Image (cartoon, rainbow, N blue to C red; front, side, top):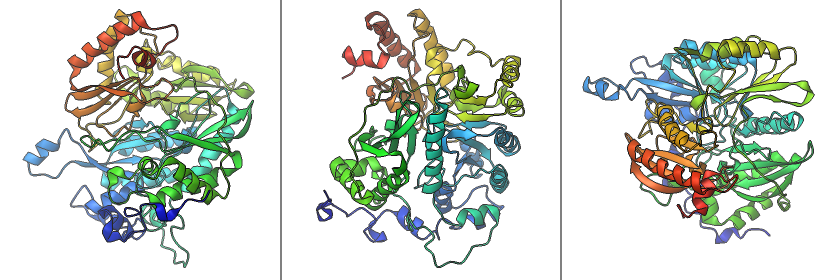
Length: 567
């Protein structure tokens, strides 16, 4: 059935004049397709940063301007500008990286990125601490490795995720190809990136520079992911657009389509909220690109461009109605979605250690706490992985849980990899509890400008104290998902964890419990604005109840819901 467009309220979307919309819409429209003043700002040696409008445009290029917040107050007292630096995020569809690319990334991190690499919750790399004068060298170095940062941030399609499943190599390869093609198709097409970062000349043309996005791109970011049941490792319900692979044996038949997932919310704005994606039907495997265009164009045309806190696709769906959105998608597709197919998820974590793949190959998945790769006393993790990269004949796969898979290892090379893992002390999980292995944190302080509290730097120590409680109740090997963010935005997907902690102020967090272990249920706010002592006391009580009252095989999140601890 064709939607009745006349009945839809359109006072906040791209049909309106720019003067009626938010300032970011004018900024994008007047940016000369994302060029702005970036090139000139990079030449300015007086400041370590760039103009405010260009900070926003840089996000489309995969770059965030930040500053060292540990130094912010002292520099302010000295009447100095903030200690500006930049975060650079790589576009890496499905998290697949060659050993040669790893060697180059390591070299760039040591030269410009504070001798550290970070694996993100969306299966890519972030460089931190990059100075403005080193931005071009970093991005040109990525080009030498056939990598870029296009659309890794900004009001566009972010990095496309893909399941990491070593037991399904042929099926994974087919789904990965779809994810890679989706990323290449959905990125913006302006020549701005090549001109600013590679020094190429602008090519005069009568063709529209942005045939899909237009002058104002999307209202907000848009996230796409591909998942292969029974593992929900990408948290498909947290994606704006999720493709759930439906296979018969190793044969891919198509995808269930899920729309409208998003984790972000804003403190003090109850009208903002996390939302799980809704499954709206099934498509054949050869209709992925058409579906991406149809779904994204609905958000492009009808998304809120007046209030950025209300601009994600989830709000467009809830405002217009899921049935209306589905019908509009089908109109643009030119066919109706088939009924969704049956599927089951059983986990959303990673299989750590060695696992076997098809064709006699294998992979070793390393637990990387919070995704941070660096050298520390007693653990030269960065050196270890570089050494492995120099002898590895397969690929690396970044997992959605911030871990690293040394993948596609041949029979001949496996003893070599195993020997290096032992040499660097990486051949076991070093006694880490199941809670630690199922934990994630965002970067937060000192570089993220939105952070209200610590996250990555704080969570390991907090988990050590929680482990004391777990040991008391014989729960050290009980898999429980715990995720922490330094603000309510949800970059580590805390609202679908069994235990979620989101920063409110220095040392203060909201505690959420009751999320689904497979990422299928949102958690609920349990305690608000509490410090560490109260967090530990509350968890002690909850774990004691769980240990004595759970049913066989029951997960923590399911227990607190069944027991009525949380509504």
